[in-house]
Image (tube, rainbow, N blue to C red):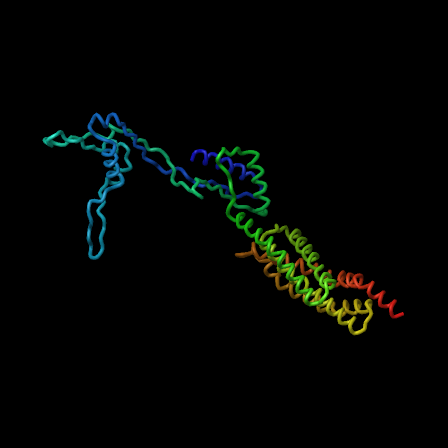
Length: 358
């Protein structure tokens, strides 16, 4: 326990110097008064006693022994016999505790007593108040709160400083728990969820348009939306967290809606006989107001979450900030870049069709 406590104190000192660390403390494992009784086996043997006799007497005096049962109606209470509390806390009184000596053969005569101090020494010293274990191994917890920065960068910096400044003895190791452990678990799940979500979005776009080219054009809105979400987080000085990652997943679906409306309308104009340039121009102008209104309504719906300060704000603010920034950037893409990309993608087909007609 001494090695654990010393190492934990050194780690706490290092962590306390890291920017963002607050309320760094080490789990208290000592400080509980402990009575240590050292029995002299030679003296007990000279008096005809054995160690068990001495231990039983001390256990009865301090811990108590059941002497009977008290019945009160249909309830029963054990009768416990032991020394009064003021005597149990007095070390000198415990040293004077009488120990009965064994009678001589035949059992004649009175029982003789000797004080406990004749055969044992007593010491009162601070001892461990708890011993925590994890997976069968002793452990001690160093806890800290993080203020003004993300947990991931804090833990990364703390690991580097601890490795440089604290020599952990052989057979001992450190592990990180709490919110960081939950963050790691959620990150591993998101590494699977995000690709699956993007694949589903592209599959639906492919089914909608029936070709990969239009699906990729609409799908291009997702990178622009993600860029806008990251910029929004940077402007508000909000670190990337799990709630922000969930916001990116939601944004992947929202970002393609305006592009889907735009491309679908341009395709319908071309099917009605409009040229590529006319279809792109008329489609962009006609869908300008619906696209702007859709983006405005969606963004305003997340404003209360983005400016929240009460309970749960640490989860709501990153998510709403990502969605608002992503919607704004994807809207700019839909109105300015997407029509241009569509015209560039179908220019060769338009030229080939014009050549064939002529």
